[in-house]
Length: 101
Image (cartoon, rainbow, N blue to C red; front, side, top):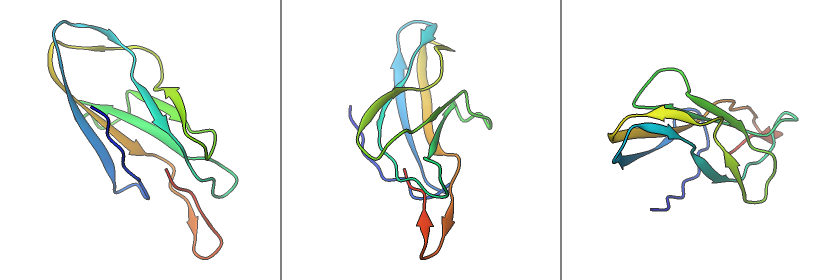
């Protein structure tokens, strides 16, 4: 399933569930674009199964759509896993610059 969402600040996220048949090492890919703010593009984090710290982090590198790997392959268990994509480096100076994902 494809999901599309605009994440404008750190309070927003996208969570999807995936049902895996076997334990293994998995690589997650994301198709993204971002708007630079404060001389940097957004950083996207991936939380697995509601963990507090990101399992994977990736820097968005442009305002055109591009596909990026979310870190390196990481272990997931068989069964339902929750993957949550979060915006890690929100930055805004009202009326001047706003970093978006």
